[in-house]
Image (cartoon, rainbow, N blue to C red; front, side, top):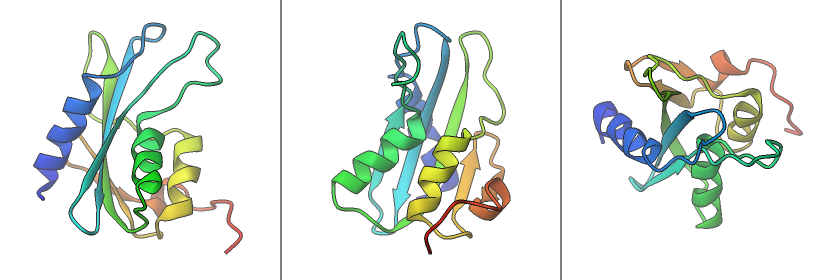
Length: 128
């Protein structure tokens, strides 16, 4: 799967986001090593704490389906009026991703830029 195809899937997932409070919609497309793709969108809640980001939705869907080997993830997002070039994962999502991937795992942004997990979270909490 090309980076462009992965970004397109993330954009489609973003269309399903539920963000009535922030109006900041995010989509993610997680590519597994076996070629399967899991998408996620952000889902807000009025009390904010139970809100779940697109990246975590994608990872949790894949993990709950038995997947444990991931290649890369595309993350796209922006508010209702503006599409941002880069929508960086929040700290919680970075920590969740680091649980399942190695330091070379790539996060792809809508402009094609790729960053490794080590670049995004150089000092992750780990029991490893």
